[in-house]
Every structure is written in structure tokens, then in C-alpha cells.
Amino acid sequence: MSQKNMIFIVNPKAGKNQLKSKMIEVVDEFSRAGYHVEVYTTKSAEDAENHIYEVGDLHDLIVISGGDGSLDNAVTGVMRLAERTNKVPPLGYIPCGSTNDYAKSLCISLKPEVAARQIMNGFSCPVDVGRLGDRYFIYVAAFGLFTEVSYATPRNLKARLGHAAYIIEGAKSLTSVQTFRLKASFDGRTIKGEFIYGQVTNSRSVGGFRAVGLRDMSFHDGEFECVFIRKPRNPMELERILQAVLTNKKIGDYIIYERAKCVKVEGVEPIPWTVDGEYAGDYKQAKVEDLHNAVTLVLGDLTTYGDPESETLVPAGVKKAPLFSR
Image (cartoon, rainbow, N blue to C red; front, side, top):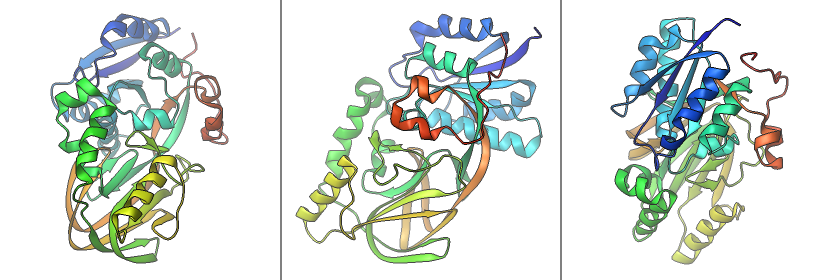
């Protein structure tokens, strides 16, 4: 059995450092599958991106361990690498963050040793990647209510309290709900008005909650699932809207759902956006594009590790074969 090379990139500051006690077990899982494992710990927020760009093509598999931000940064590195070379290895993900939206959507285990096993016994699956301006993202671009929470919440609070930190900071934002006057176009279909929230996503979980109205979404269909929430007329209507979001229900004309390959948002004033939970800049005119099947992820058997409702997430026609025969 010939040996293959893997780069295992670890964010040591992600989440509650779940990986630390399982590190030897995880690396051993990779080694027993026949990989020569190079472990690389990140030193800054964009370190994974830069390292993948520099040496990713020298490896047969890249595995990133960290939170949603770490995965986002790794995906950006893979996208940049694809611009430089045709040899772009698949990407595996071991979630160790506070919220882990994308991992939950794909039923990736939150136990590092199980996630490693999923990768070694998994299958290659192409997934869509989003682009906002010159920023890539893997699962969500958003603006408005609660979106500032993810980058405004202190990192030490995230590490200590996990998802509860988002709830604490999010509750504060309810005291002053900002509205945005805008025009949004979904592949040419246009809406106008005042909105308190907008999201363009490729995930079934956003902010730790099951995304409202997105039960039938696909990770590789070339389209985003979009949710835009209009400004409520009074606090009671706002409460109803928030309850609908939390319970995954649809109400009235306040919550608009669309699917589109390209979303354009033009604000009367610049609108602050986040991508994958990180601040992405203010845009008076924002263009969000779906890059179809741009990155290959290694996923485990969802029927084994995930909840039964998620079996439909396995892309049709994808052969479930190990990446590396033991």
C-alpha cells in the first residue's frame, strides 16, 4: 500500500479545545489509513488560507480542525490554490468551534475521533461555494439582526460559553433593531422595501438554529437558499417573526424565501455584511454568487452518523467509496 500525504491544520484556539485530548487518537486514525500526516497549527486568523495556498498541492488530502471561521479560511485557501494549480486535494473537516453550523448541516460528528473516522471512510462530494465581492464563503452571507453578534462577541466569551455567548449578545441587539432600505434581485426577480435581516445561504443551520424554510436545500445544486425579513410594524410583530425563526415556521408576508444563483442587494446606505460569521465589510451594492461544485469535501456516511432526516443530503450519483483503501 503506497503512502499518501496529508496536511492536518489545527486551530488551537477554536471552541473549547475539544481536540486536545483526542489529538493522538485522531492522528493515529489517519496514520493507520496509510497517510503521512503533517500537523500544522495556525498562528493567526488567515494562517490556514495562506498555508494551503503555499503547500496544498503537495498533499493528497487537507484536513482542517476548528470552527466555522477556520473552515471558511481553509475553503478560501483551496479556492486560491485552484487559481494557481490544477492539483487541488479534497478537504476534510473536524469541527471544534462554538456553533459548528456547517458541520451540523452535513452531519459531521462533533467528536474529533469520530469525525476523523468519517473522513477516512468517507466519499468525495463536490459542494457549492459562495462569493461576496472578493470574499469566499462556504455556508452563509448575511446582514441585519443578529449578524453582528458573531464578530462582536469577544473570542474569550465564545470559548468559555460556546453557543450561549451568541444568545447573550444577541439578546442585547433586540433593544435597537436596525432597518435597511434596499432593493434585492434574485436571478432577476426583485423585491424592495425596509428589511431587518437578509441571508444567502448553503446550509441547514445558521447561528446554531435550524434555518427556517430550508428543509429541502441542497449543498450542490448551484443555487442559494435566501431568507429576507421585512421590517415589522410593532414589537409584537417582531416577537412573532423571531418566534417563527426559532421554531422554523413561516408567517405571512414578512419572511420572503427565494432560491437563486446570483443575488444582488442595493442599499440606500452601505450595508454591513458577514460571511460565515465574520465581518466582511460594508456594501452599498453587493453581489453574491454561487460557484457551483467549487470545492470537494470528504463526507462520512450520513445514514450512519447523521439524523435520519438528513439522508437526502447525500448527493445523488456520488459513489460511497473510501478515499484510501486500508
